[in-house]
Image (cartoon, rainbow, N blue to C red; front, side, top):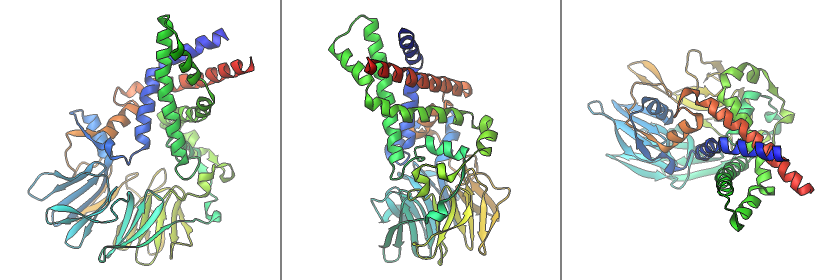
Length: 434
């Protein structure tokens, strides 16, 4: 028992600071639609500035006027001017609309009228993706509710959720996808429960890191008392034990993600059968990553693939593979894959879209040349001199803020967390047994 206590103390003292950083940054990354996380911080660090480009979501060009939508707002540029920020708010889609532009944001729709962005409907709705067909906007609220909005009449026509048939959800998935879903808080239960469990686990880890150091310091100073005894009781109870299940999942999956390239052959060759998958995979009601409407048929993209419907009620799987983004250009639908090939839908036929970058977010053409919006796109985008708090916490979480070799520190922290969970559980069980 003394040895287990020593092991627990060593693991906690040596890794507590790193675990605290991972817990706080992980909590921020889990909530990518909180506006407060996109406040800007000035920096000249080129690595961080390049990482900020991941937050560019959409681009539209019309009559030499460029509009770029990003998580931190909207940037605009005329032919003879430089980029300037004209809107603050999480922007996920930008559409040319008649003689103007439309924004799809975390606070509904906005339209460019003269020089200002004016609210144009669905205010109060967090819109995560959308599709435009003539005067009809089909948007998705928080990846789960489909909204059909008449732009001409400025009124909501329909609001509905999806109900995918059970037979269309019998999909086996690769272990690589399962590990990512677990780590990102979308791999166990529906109704955002998985995310809440992630939040619960990270908040518990923050408490354990801070209280553990405080307890150790006070005892080391030979200063104890009622407060320390209460903290020790809080440090080891049933609620902490419950959180340790999800902390173990985060630690193990985090190690795999730190070395995703090294583990890629194993992760991509290992299949998790549908019958063994958690409940969320047999519903996917809150997994609408992309949506499209061509005037006749509705389509949504989720982690299993592309599903189609004529009436928003009866859905069928049309094409397999994570459909991350949809970009419609006239009669062609471009499908950006996440861990899956990019595809094109034209004339009711899906084909692999070769020589296109992985996980592109938008497509635009200039002088007949096709460009893709990705984190590495250099042209027709604003030059940045600041990063968001979200990017800062992302770089802290993956270790790139410190150095390329910092992932090994994260690995060390993850292993120490596993040891803390095992030794802490043993000590709790041993005391209960006595």
